[in-house]
Every structure is written in C-alpha cells, then in structure tokens.
Length: 178
Image (cartoon, rainbow, N blue to C red; front, side):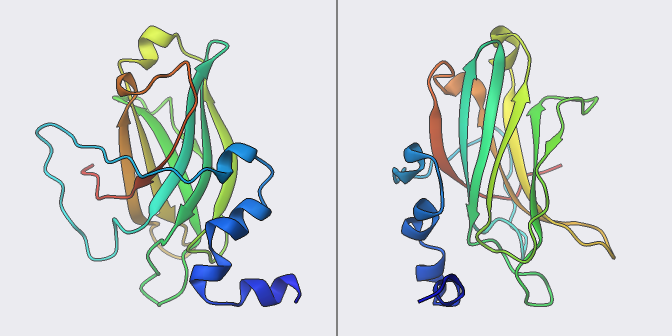
C-alpha cells in the first residue's frame, strides 16, 4: 500500500495519532495528552456556526531567555462554507498586546482539516514579563479572495504553566471575543 492509499482511507485512520507519530520526528509527540480546558474569569464565550470546532496541539517552554511555542498539529477543523477542508494557519499573540508586537504566524497549509504545522515561534522576553501574559493561539482559514475565516482559538494564562518545563497539550478551539 502506497502513501496515497494510506491518506485516502477514512479520516479516523488517515489522521490518527499513529499516522501522525509515524511521520513525525519528535519522540515526545507520541504521548497522548488529555486536552487542557481554559476558563476565563468574567468572559462570555459565544458559539458561532463554523468556529470553535477542533483542537490545537502546542508545546510551551521558557528556556535560555525565551518563551518557545511549538505549534504541532490541529485536528477536526471546520470545513469551509463550500464544504472543503480549510487552508489553515495559526496566529499567536502574548496578550495583552495593544500594539500587536508579539504577533507571530505559521505558514498556510492547503486544504487540510488535520494539519501538522511543526513550527517554532519564539518570544525573547524576561520570564517575569512572560508570566503576566496569556498565550492566545487562533486558527484561521486563509482565503485569497475574501476575508480570512476564524476557526477557533485557545487562551492559556502563562502563569498557570510550569514554564521552565515543557508542557505539551491539546487545547480545544473555542470562540474568542475580539
């Protein structure tokens, strides 16, 4: 069986953790981690028809004077209004960030509801500053003809993580008020 045959099988096979792990060079990614749910005090979380589905796997660690955010995978992303898999990319901020100087983006992957990004985003900031921020990661569908579509996001208060150790987790994508 060739690779194209493997990837044309049912989604639960073609996009399984086993298949991702086989094509993925990092041993630590083989661990199946429970999603970490983030609650925000006083924030109303609304639901949109085509956003907030799926989840995003990230690794977060502070070492060598920098916060490293490895965007690993997304899974079960919503289809476009045309019923096609999205062209996803991830946008990350350390919020609050009124000037948007902490904005980082991954590359766009074409037509994939279960993308593997494998991109490292770095922030060279002192640890005491990092601990006062939250990591906001949002997933978007890139559309060259119209406005990009928000697929969902996660907000992780960095003070809640053991930043000197690597935290690898799946985060459910939710609607994030902007």
